[in-house]
Amino acid sequence: MRFLLWTAVFVAWFAPASADLQADAEAALTAGRSAEVIDITDEILADIPVDFPALFVKAAALSDLGRFGDAAQTAGAAFRAAQNDAERLQAARLASSAHFRARQYARAEWWLRRASNHVNTPEEAANVFTEFQAVRRENPLGVRLNFGVAPSNNINGGAESEVFRLEGLDFDLFLPPEQVALSGIEYSGDVQLSYRLSRSATQATRLGVFLYGRTYTPSDSAKDSVPGISGSDYSLALLDISLAQRRLIFPQVGPTILSGHIGQVWFGGDAFWQYGKIGVGQDFMIGDGSAITLQAAVEDQRGIAGRQADTRITSIATGYRATLANRDQMQVILNCQLYDTDAFESSFEDYSIVFDYRLARPVFGINWGGFLGAGQTTYDDFFLSLDGRRDEYVFGGGSATWTDISYFGFSPRVDLTAERRRSDVDQFSASSLQVRFGLESNF
Image (cartoon, rainbow, N blue to C red; front, side, top):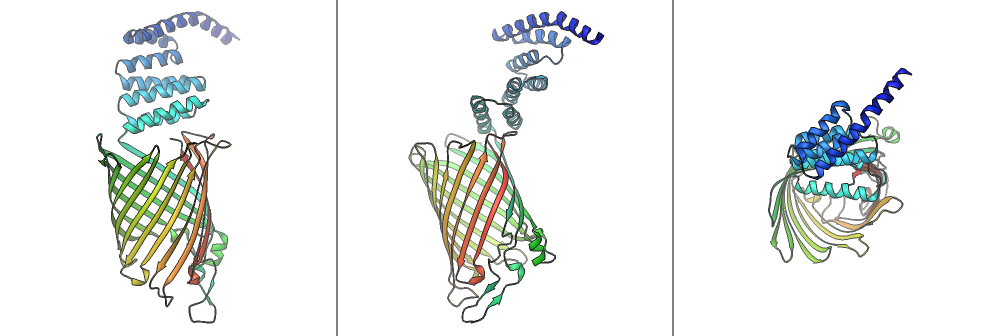
């Protein structure tokens, strides 16, 4: 009871004085008298160290004076002292602004992600999004993270049936269990880092590092079929280092992209191949939000310790992308890949077409997208056939991102993908179905 009495006396004594001082501080800030603001707010904070209005106004004044480190620190204190979402949103945006002005772009992005946890209206979300994009444009370092968990009915790329026939034979043969489709759960993740080396009105040059990894947990049925099986038997890891330049060589047409890559692939824990790749692409802008793209690349793969034959891959692709009147986005891509290996029976050609469509606006609070494609793979020579091998395949999928659910700017996402391949060499007919659960950045 005595504690409550003294609390009431404290509030009655200090509240009016603090309110007057706060009004003076805000008036001084509006008038541009930032040094005076700091003196006034320090007087308030000497009595009430966690006073949000005083901390917020002081942080703004410190920023105006160019003391960005102190401003960010004070805005962080204001964030911790905030009593509601509106105050936390204001403090986080102010901390981000201070870091941005100090050219501490990664910290600025982090504070905007914290700010996104406290938006309550579409306008607030749009403001945070716009500020994040502005920081990203100035930040020479780009970081993108992806990870997911995906139940799959074919973790090993195995055949859909254990029974097959060889050409010219009238009796059935049986594949070993490890070559038949095995089910399980895939765990995958990747990190994409890029650093802008230079930028001008006509070009931007970036150095990139891409890391990807995946492994599996076999299902009980897979373990029963193949005793001793381990998900790491099918694990894959990739390291790619790239240098890319986007340049307006032909300004009246569109940007040209030049790139070079070196990298290495590990499979089942063993180094499998190294590669080098060069590519070029050209955009042809044909309207507002529409373009035709031509791309070509040459890749040289070198097998390590005889685990894979040396391979040269030539890729050619063309695509059309457009933003429709309702702001939906569509894309059509044609691909051609030519694989020339030292093992002649592994050389083949692959042709495919993909149609992709993304809705601009959420439906039931979900961003939707989908794709559908088809292709053909042709081997002129194949060791299990007298006249080569021909595969036809179809694939498709869709994605759903729950943008209404967000934490630090990430929303849950579900991807469904399916593929069916029919081969005239029976044991290479296969199908797969996979559901991936992951997170997607809203920025």
